[in-house]
Amino acid sequence: MATEEPAEHPTTELDARYSSALNPRPGAADVTATEWAEALRQLETAEIFWLSTVRPDRRLHVTPVIAAWHDGALYFSTGPGEQKAKNLAHDGHCALTTGANALTEGLDLVVEGKAERVADPAVLEEVITAYETKYGPHITSPEGTFHGIGDAFRKGDAVLFAVAPITAYGFGRDDGVYTHTRWTF
Image 1: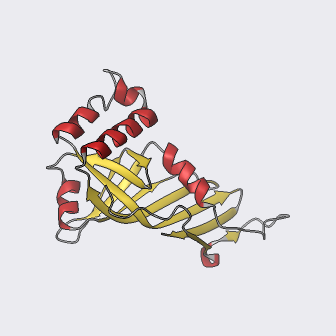
Image 2 (image 1 turned 60 degrees about the vertical axis):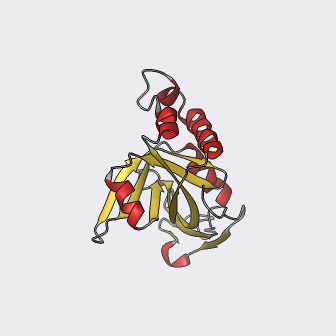
């Protein structure tokens, strides 16, 4: 589990340099930062995240993963011999990204932190429950894409990592109004 839990209410700031009202309309000038509660709702429901790590030779490695938010951290897994596990063994700093693929609506999120391997059996069980709750039949059904992931965590066939946010960014788009929010933990 992550060594430090993030603050329940991180410092929130709107970066006006990257926030704008591209299509002026009544109220468009009242651009405000996205609340952490909204970002958290998206982190809890997003199904796919993109994990960015750095290889020992400093080249980037980006790959999709499933992840679950639990107890102040994002949890994801990988096989012990996979590139992302090798990268994280060398340098735990990483970013998890999720969001919408639309130009005019949605909220993209970037969570930066340091991945820490989870070995505590009690935490493993809590995260297995979080995965099963979030992904349902994808994990719990024998026909599910990730069926058996809980046993893989328990046996060490899959390595579980926790990323407690250090900094997170939200890039919002709503009918021509763009926002750039930074949360510091």
